[in-house]
Amino acid sequence: MTLTLREALLSFRRAPLLSALSVTTIAFAIFVVGLFALVVLNLNRALREVEERVEVVAYVMRGTPVEVVTVAMGDLQRFPEVASVTHITEDEALARAQKELVEFQGVFDDLVANPLPASLEVRLRPGFRDGEHVQDVAERLRGFRFVDDVRYGRDWIARLDRIRDLAAVGVLVIGGAFAAAAVVIIGTTIRMAVLQRGREIAIMRLVGATDGFIRRPFLLEGSLKGALGGIGALGLVYGAHFTFNELLLRAEFFSPPQGAMFLVLGTALGFAASLAAVSRHLKTVGST
Amino acid sequence: MIRFKNVFKAYPKGVLALKDLTFHVGKGEFSFLTGHSGAGKSTVLKLIYAEEPATSGSVQVSGYHLGTLPAREVPKLRRRLGIVFQDFRLLEDRTAEENVAFALEVTGARRNVIQPKVTRVLAQVGLAVKAGAYPRELSGGEQQRVAIARALVNDPFVLLADEPTGNLDERATRGVFQLLRDINANGTAVLMATHDLDLVRGTAYRTIELQEGGLVYDSAVDEQPGKRAAP
Image 1 (tube, rainbow over the protein chains, first blue to last red):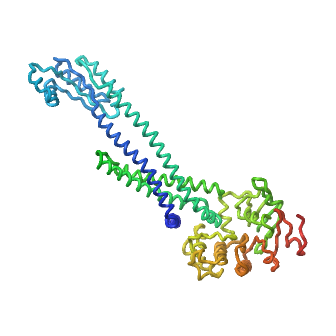
Image 2 (cartoon, each protein chain N blue to C red):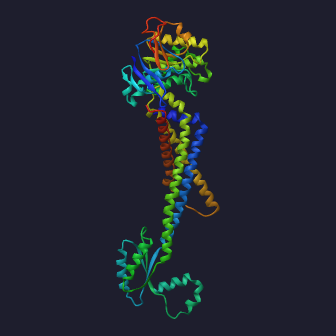
Image 3 (cartoon, chains in turn blue, red):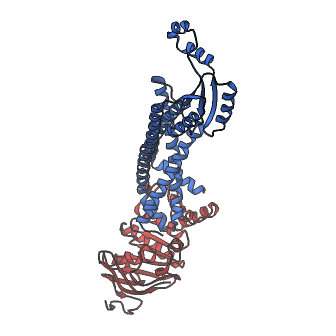
């Protein structure tokens, strides 16, 4: 193990330029993936915030006894989709309207009777805020005799569904393409490093080194380069995020475990690319 | 110890490098492998250190049947051989000492075993004082001595030398050749491929001569020098 580590570290000293090129390439490859991941993270957060506002409002007929509404609320809360049910009385509805619609203050002052109905505001659990579930809950609400009408912004939720679907496809396609490009770029740079040491590999074989022995320093070297590239990529993404925050608007950054994924991803990519490159090289020059 | 029996070696484009080659090299023997360029000398050596397989026939090296030798056993075979080339094949970024130690490190030898052995073989080849020198700081003859030290450090039963003096001037050639003779005198067999006939003629060592991949002369078989075996 000491020899493997020594050989891996020596490779940085022997070919500093190529090593720096490998680390930089890995850093930029992961940076692009990371930047995209950051966009997705913030898009998801924005979608979550919008989704949290998804609610179904059931308007209650005038004269419905409070006891009936209370029993219905108990039933509603047992729906698996339902997170909370709030009863807004007629007076509360008026008070809220007066507070939120100050420009109509004159109209409210002239009122002789409260025209606003009582309502039940139903909020849904995460995972049930898509059009299908919302419509399903709305249909069940319509089934209550005291419910006059149900509103939930059908078009708005359908649009939200489309954005969510687009984001998911985008994550898969663009993220996958970036990740694949990163693997190819990293694989090429590591292969350059392996080819540069082709003579050394040939000599190692001549003196009786096994393929496993030859591979080990390369794998460690690739993993180290990958890890350094991952850290570099995290720094670059942080820099981009910091600049964006300063110049445009506040965006969320990765949590520490998510940040650690850069290190893990870099190491894994470096390891996999080295394994592929050195194995291919050993196969090309003849296996022992 | 090394036994070729009816060995043929053909390369993909149909070039026949070895034709029905049969010979035997005994324990502790010094043999020259001679012939013009392209006669098949290097191919014979490559077959011995399992760099390439024979197309047909059998090659045995110290009990290893190379035709059926699993790939994982090849490194074990090579650790029992010493191999020296015309172009030295040293690692340029390592000192003489590190180049020699490298051959032991790949076998997993411990550090406390490596150092005394390296010191001993470097002294044996007359380079103890240049242990810390890099190849670029050494002359051709000295670089070849480092390569020989590397080949010797695992105590091989045979030293395979492929034109070891091909890149050296006359004085260095004599020095390296004398070193190979000393190594042989200590019990290690030497199989030296060369086209330097002056070197061959000046000694009574066995000569195996190849021509277009076939054996044309073997001094061990053809008792009188000058008598040629049938091609």
